[in-house]
Length: 333
Image 1 (cartoon, helix red, strand yellow):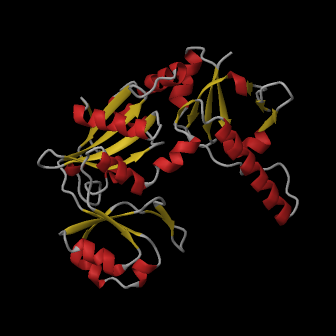
Image 2 (image 1 turned 45 degrees about the vertical axis):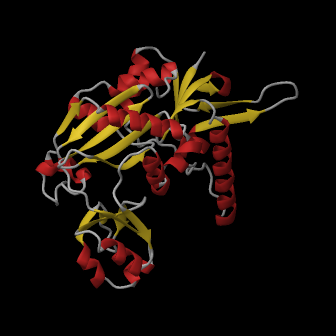
Image 3 (image 1 turned 60 degrees about the vertical axis):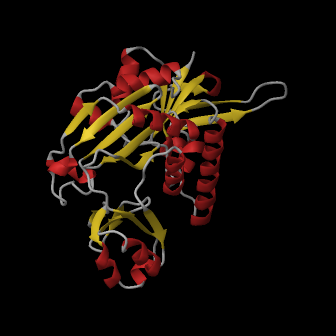
């Protein structure tokens, strides 16, 4: 019996709509909450002379089991390394055991890497590189914002003086916890270029500054590609203020950011599919600016981005598309 393997964690509600459809259509699947691999599951991988390697994972609460040879496709939704363990012994032994569990999980993910997947343990890490993303976009003829990454104040200031305003972004970690315990979301900031000259050298030397020319927007696009499906959502971020989402549309969630499903521009559909094929991916969430002159500017591609809120806002059948991809192993065409 062929099954779909969903790799995520206990807190992730994003797969719920897909899982409900799988149940409704009696499509076999197995959800593995990977952070709890060592406490909620039993497993074994083995190989005997003359036989193909195989493994099983069993959910101890439900007795549901999946064998490696049953796996038809994998959805790398939100996998994490094993973090919970049944026993505490001492700090050094616990550290060693955690590393062994992590290494087994890495081995298992690589073992599965050749299967059809939405997301991919092997390819996602490479595809997350903002530097590589820019390179590929340029190779495919797509316009990108002029960019500089540096720990040198001189380099950032020299770069920024070419433009009136600069976007300052995070490469990866968008959250910061202050001493008072308050958590801050480090969204994109629009900064006057001249103000960077006034900042101390230490502000540049102790981190990597990710600076781009600030591109004026008419609106923005979020394009989600799932196999052969393409969903394009227009985000009217410029109806909002800088504090509520015009600079970074993610702030607009709480301020009525207008969403609208539109027909995908043929130029962008072609680019997105070529981009994913170049990176051996079957899924990607692309962000574009549409300028006041109707030019498209590529910002980034999240190889494991979220899309559930678009489905909810726009009543578009994205969960059905995901089920179709996983059940029928649909490539990007």
